[in-house]
Length: 160
Image 1: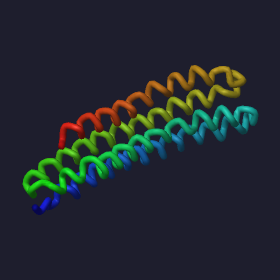
Image 2 (image 1 turned 60 degrees about the horizontal axis):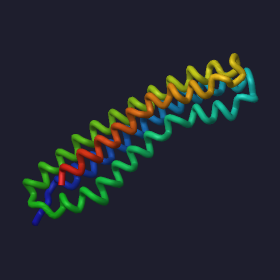
Image 3 (image 1 turned 180 degrees about the horizontal axis):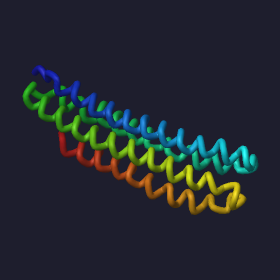
Image 4 (image 1 turned 45 degrees about the vertical axis):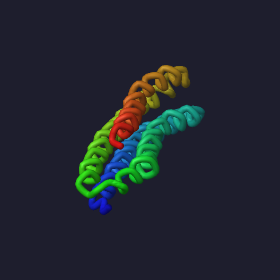
């Protein structure tokens, strides 16, 4: 049985999920880190809080990695065992799931960085008292990354 291009499309789908997380996390951490540099220059005692808030957008990269690993370990072997025409269909499905996950992880992380940068900007003014509310607000954006990962895994279960 020759699987054809289906397995390659599945791997591309997983790679896209990881890429969305990497790009979104980079943007989010960059935005939050930029605000953090300004906040720490105003009040160096806020470094710990800045570090916490600026690191939050990194988690979407891990969600993308989990999706990629799930595809490689759980989905790919099943696609490789299929005839070429069925493998192509399944590979396209996985590619589509990976694309949706890429957008979920990317946008979630980037917007989480914007939320965190707003919280960081007020750390010196509030002497760090806004850290709890800033984390809670950042968690709202985080939930979309988590939902993207859960959607991807639940959908992938149906592929094979």
